[in-house]
Length: 396
Image (cartoon, rainbow, N blue to C red; front, side, top):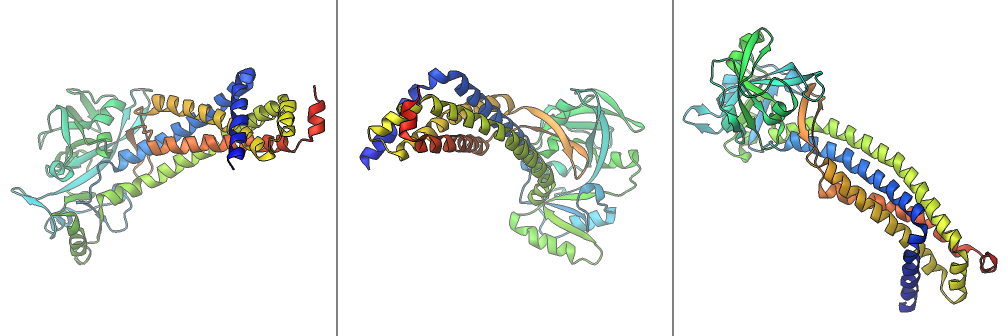
């Protein structure tokens, strides 16, 4: 066994030392695999960044109440009386001002993208003052909170970064009303950072919503209080609503987009991977052909076919891993933290987010590179081991 392993190590080291003599073909293989890995990491970082933006601010002790049958805030509707009944339900956290429940509106407006100048759908949310303690992670990074009863807006940091008109102190016209931007807020990297907030009581008449709302965000006394709160609402004959944890709601909202982006990424990487695979095959077939007499001589001296096969595959694997590491490193440098905005299919509004290159994505990318390398080296290795010794020794 030791002798067999020694043979594998000896031939592998010999093969690796000859790579500089074939640097052109070897470099082409590495660049091809680096490209595959770079695209793979880049696309998956988009999906992961979107998923994180959708779920980062979710909390198990926050519930969302919608009209029964609604799959998003856009398709929901609640009356003022509905919202009052919901705020009186058991299981809610309370402070000196009452139940921590915020009845809210969701309006989609058009603002120009800073990067292109083209109009984009941006979510404008009307909230009540309880919205701030309900979320628990809203922090003003510039300016101040809006004053109830005034035409004032506060913008999430993502919205302010991506869309024009949201600079602190600026006045913008939405519908038939002028609004002043009085603050910029963060929300722990979550979805709220893509939104613009104002007082719900001011937004209702501005967009002819009467005294109606679309959702209630409620802070629970504890995460374990959710079922008690949900049962109280779903069994009330005066209501036709559904309650869902905020974490579950955001996870559902992100599923379709992340699955679509990942599907595209895997398809593109697969197509490019085929090209890189053929490149690796070509490189290793050329390497085997150039060293035909050397391999035959080694076998004539007693080296087995198994060590020859493994040595060729290890060489191909080394080239693939080198290319994969370079591609992953460059992709992480370029994509990680890169900011962009994309459409949320449930609300047809923009979500600002940052690409996220996670260790899991990098690990999958390296596995992809290694797979291409091993498959690319397998058939040339089998060819090298099966060639007749006499034919190989006669080659010049």
